Image (cartoon, rainbow, N blue to C red; front, side):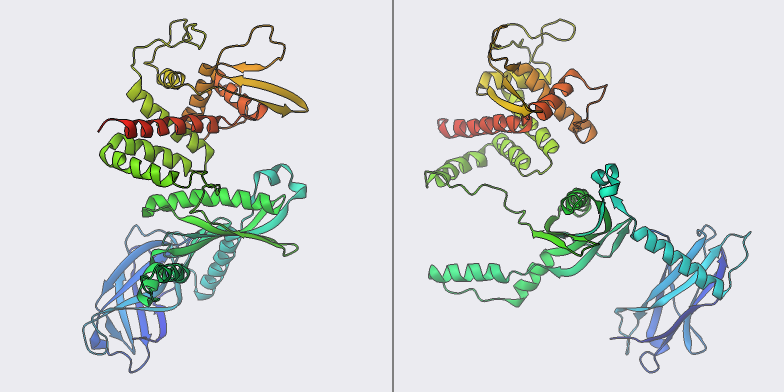
Length: 501
C-alpha cells in the first residue's frame, strides 16, 4: 500500500556527537494506525561533495508525539561532523492495515548538522544556506571538465563534447557520481522479441511448429540483460573521434571494475558524442558479441569436420582445453598489450611441456646465443625456452618494408643473417632478438599493466627493439606472436586428432 507522508522533521538543526536526536513522522490521517507499526528504521547519511556516505542506521518502536510518530536515538560520540540528511524511513508493521511487510516511505530530505564543539550552532536559515552551498559544490564536481591527451597539448583547438556510452550485462542499483561523469541504471533490459521471431520463423520452416511470444520469458530476458549508461558531461577534445576514443578507453576500465565486483564484465552497445557548440551528434551502435571475419571457407564442410574431430579430444584432454581456452581469451581481448601477454602464455604453456630445461640455444646458423656475462644461454631461462620452441617448430621468419619519413626500410626477422655486404641494405633482426622484444612487452604488461611506446633512458635493449619494430618498422609484433601461437595451437589439435586411439 502507498503511505502518504505529511511531514518529516528532527527536533534541532544542529547537534553535537553524543547528543540525542528525535525524528518525527506525520502520516496521512486514516491510512495507518499507530498500533500497527512495530518499528521505524532510519538511515542517516553524511553529505559530501562527491557522494553521500552512510553515517548511522538505527530503528526502534515509535512513540506518539502529538499527531506524529517519533523515534529517539543517541548519536555516537565518533559521528563525523558535517551536513547530514534523512530522506526515507522504513516502517515495519505488525498486522492490520499495515502488514508485517516493510514499507519504505520517502520525503523531502531532512537536513541537520553535526558540529564541532568549538563551533557555534547553525540556525535554520544558516543551515539552508549551507545546503545550497553544498549543492553548488556538487554541481561543480559533477560538471568537472575532462581533457583528452590531445586537448592538453592543443588546448586552443579544443571543443567541448558531451559523451554518453551505454552498457549491458551489469546491474547498477543506484546512480554513481564521479568527477565529470556518472554511471546510472536504466532499469530496463534488452528485449528478446526479435530473437523469438528468429526462432519462431525458423522452427516453422523446419516444421517444428511455432514458438509463441511469452511474457514471462520476456521479463526473464530483460532481468538477465540489465542496462546502464555512463555520461561524461563536458569533455574537451580536438574532435568528436578524440572525445569518443578517450571516453571509450575510460569506460572500458569501468567495465573491468564492474565485472570484478559483479562476476560478469558488461559490454558496450552504443556510444555518442555531442558537440556542445553546434549540437551535432556522432553515434554508433556496436555488436561486441561478434568479432570474427565474414570470409567463408572454400571447403563448406571444413568447420563441421574440424569440430567433429576436435571436440572428443578436448573432452578427454584437459591440457588441450587449457591451451585452447588461453588462446581464445587472447583473441577476445581488445587491449593489444594484454593480448601480447596472453599469446605469450600460450607459447609458454607449450614450451614448458615440449622443451627440456637443460638445452643450450643457438642461432639458425649454429652459433651460440650467450648471456650478458658471456655464458651459453640455456632453456632454464623462460624466454630461451620459448625461443627454442619457436625455432624448433619453424615458420617464424617474415620480411617486409615500411615507409618511415619518406624513406623505405626493408627488414627481415629470423632465419639466416644476410652477408655483411648485403646490397639491399635490409635490416635484419635475429629470431632471438625478436623473441626477447616480445618477451619485453609481455613483462612490461605483466608488471606495469601496459607497454609504453614512449622512449625512456631506462629502457632495456629488448624494449628499445620492441619500440623500433612497432614505431619505425611498423611491424605488428603482437600479431607475429599471435600467428605463432595460432599455428602452435592448431598443431596440438591436429596431433591429438591423428594420434592412435
